[in-house]
Length: 307
Ligand SMILES: NC(=O)CC[C@H](N)C(=O)O
Image (cartoon, rainbow, N blue to C red; front, top):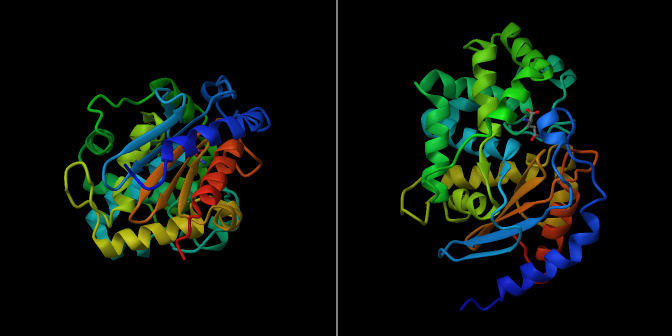
């Protein structure tokens, strides 16, 4: 038995945030996401010693959206190491996740790997090294989440691709600055498929547990990232994982985190656990209202601090 009753804490949080579920607005930039019912919630903890706790709709799956950017960066760091940082920066953006203006000012080098432009250029790098990037990404999630039948929501991927204009503009702008090697549409197709990978909160917390475990997947004992790279990745998540709301998230939650427009948020408590939450209603920054509130409560109740 752990010293803390995680299950009781998660149950309490689930009840407490219920009134917030309908205060946000579900993502509506593609029809496939606009149809999702806002009144849904789940939260799961996966500890570095392999225990899982979950409350809410624990079996409900959702597309992980921008939380996939963390795996994109992981797979790219495995292949490029520090060389990757010639193509993407490490600074917080202070602008929206899909901003184009900053990219023009900064000559096609995105501020960080978690805004869309940064993830797309990282995806371009990965695309150059993998013969089947979508398959490789799915396999990574299958292995790390412990669910060998993880799938892609093709309706979401197709819809993202159909309405890809802004992301395509970023790709073309980077290409005009010489920071893009493959065909923009090919890379975007891979990027949207990564975003449309479907997991539930338990699987998401498990898949990224290496981030809390010095870079080692506790399910297999396999090293995913070196301890140094793992520290660097967590640091970048802390400063940039929630886009232009990263400061507020850091202040309220005190953990590195990554959000996605489906309303999911992943957070990491180093050497203890990963926690994944899902509540589709978003705030104006594109981050889950109830998801962040839930993590803030978790942080308060467990007296979490990485400092
Ligand atoms: N913030 C997000 O989750 C953005 C991901 C979304 N698929 C996009 O590319 O716009």
